[in-house]
Picture 1 (cartoon, rainbow, N blue to C red):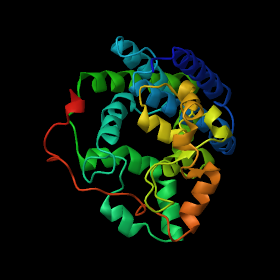
Picture 2 (picture 1 turned 180 degrees about the vertical axis):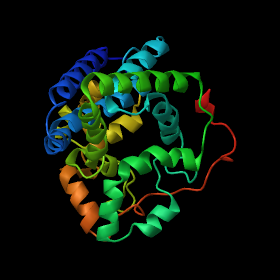
Picture 3 (picture 1 turned 135 degrees about the vertical axis):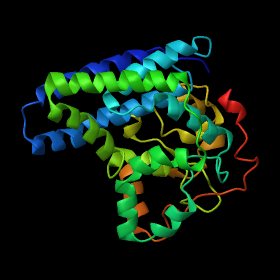
Picture 4 (picture 1 turned 120 degrees about the vertical axis):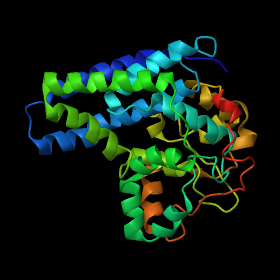
Length: 292
């Protein structure tokens, strides 16, 4: 357990790469912008959201330097295009604390999602729109009043977006926003959203993936390990299953993020309804102790 300051260095490098790419695309066609956003820029932005996930667990600078984590989160958030670093941290903690609990786990699809998106076409549509569901579901299920840090996050983000727009033009800004949206929906890397907790084997709620995408995803594929030890940075998660193979090798795992997306859409046994769902353990109107 501990922190990994390399996370901060990688975040700064990714921001510089995205600013450079936005500059280079300012005079390209929209077709080029969309293709580069899907194949490259969105991958970087998706990786950034996973860096923000690490930062949300205070794994960049540790639990003794909380504001250092928040500030590197603000910086990394800029290239994603919309403010999410602080809100994600607050709601993601509820996911760890109340996993699978109805009304408390913001990662759990709502009942109407399970009803409306149940066949191949609608599941494909749900997958395409997944960034919207992922972003707005927590605010609908269990809204929390925004705090000072969320205001700072929003101000920094809007300032950065205006800079990109006025310095490089709308195509540069579109590159960042389209990349974030497209690669968190119908994209192989987005398979980690599905692979983590959608029930592919009866009775198993969380799954790991040990393939090459982990090199781009801060080892988020080691998801059983992450939920067992959320204070271990992604760079060290492989050591957990290596140290204790008897606890992990026999568990169901996913061989491919892309295959997960394909099965989710085309296999009638899978969909937003394929989740372990538990009764709420506390009145959702009460404040979570993790909010403190």
